[in-house]
Image 1 (cartoon, rainbow, N blue to C red):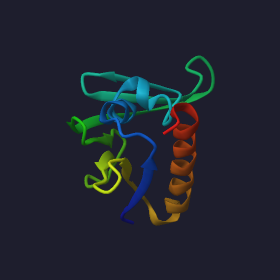
Image 2 (image 1 turned 90 degrees about the vertical axis):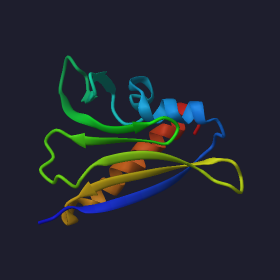
Image 3 (image 1 turned 30 degrees about the vertical axis):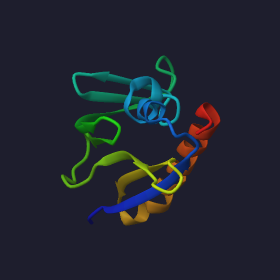
Amino acid sequence: MEKQQIQIEHSLLSTSPNIIWNIISTEGGLSRWIADSVKENKGVFSFTWGSEHGHHETRKAALVERVRHSHIRLRWEDETDQDAYLELRMVRTEITGGYILHITDYAFPDDVDSLYDIWDQNLDQLRRSTGL
């Protein structure tokens, strides 16, 4: 069974490209809304959910592409579908000058609803922790 692409758009409450870029592309920014801890070492991001000294899950993703003030694309190390990736892209709107966060991710058809739920939780955490 092949994974299907999902795309999510989320309006951000900031017109600062530097703030948004920091939130979607750095260890500190990503750990505020996607995972409890994010570390980057030589192009490999380690995402940890839960306590590092207790019950936790860690997944690693290789950096595929990072274009400043545009997007970051990662591929999970355990990903078997070579076409699948995670991309966080900041898109400036011409009308308001604000930004939209465009998320591209992949899931098996039976897991699509769960993945949307996870992204809803992540985006809620983004709003609570950053005001974006």
